Length: 504
Image (cartoon, rainbow, N blue to C red):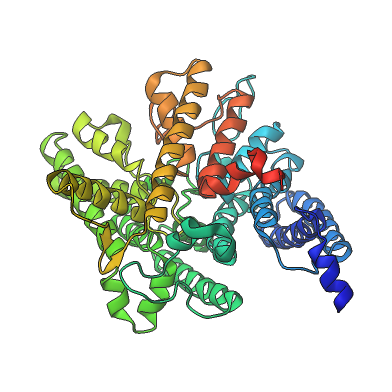
């Protein structure tokens, strides 16, 4: 025992054995997950079952071997945890891309990685249906095997809750910023975890996630326009706020008010902290309805739904029912960073389309499967702005930023302000790179924010009816890295590129 303790104190600043061991375990899990689409391929008698088999088995063998050889013997430390989280999404995309290429569906490995990263990061941007920069025609969504469609949606579903569970597991290591963003309640003094044990909390969150997915699946399946396969795919994509569909025209391809309403409701629910869903289902209605972030999220959703729907009705001359239907769906789809589409918002008049553009810089609540900036950051920034105005009038007064009865510490404010600055710098760099590749202003801005915010469809040449196939290969790697950086809350990935990460 003493020898183990002495070895633990003499560990290197980054224990790569632990990193490799845990990545091996995650690789094994990814290979296990690939058996599900393999089963779908067998059900539909598709030849792509071989591609999934030849990817799943090696991944499971390699992952199990690495975990066995480098089985972790010590607790994770901060640097190792950041490295594991960042490499998990990248490694998962590199491995999960093989079924697309081995099946012959996609000729470009870069396109396959882009599609897989878009799935795991719950972005929903696709290269299917377009022509690549070197003139290769990618197949349309409805022309590829069902097993591959299932894998796209399943990657959404795994990535959606995966980020919450990983974030929860890293709470002790993320520092004040990560701790605060995952608070189950911001207005009170309750614990930020549902149970004292992380494993139990993760199980409870997954239980809620699976349960809500099952309910939506059943609600979609009972409608005659969807069979079981389409229902499960859209349930996966909705609860993960991903946006991959089995139709070329996304949800618009079903042309059903009922389907639109069900998906709108569950997109909204997926944009809410899943810990709060658990509290609500456990009978703690007070915590749920008094949560200020949920109130703010709901208020913005209702406000933008009224304004966008009103614009479609009064300016774009939509029928009132259609204006409310399409306006509410697109508002919820964008504010939760899901990216489903029922109407081409790029064709709307400037008033409604500009309002929708503003929502590209929002996101769901902390602890949801949504991407983007997150509502709690926006709310605290607005509170800080109000505080600054009051401070100008009363310069001698001590005016803390409050959220309910809780005072927001200055360290948290600095963390959030830093996040905003870095977020917009990265967004600008992404847009600049896209413009250097010849894209116009709106296309460059749209591609950057849609990737960084994990939204998917954007503006210009990347609108809701378009795809990303024609982006040069280097541009696709830039965009898929933006997807990963945005999904992992910026600092988790960016910190490993700083010199301080690798120094004592």
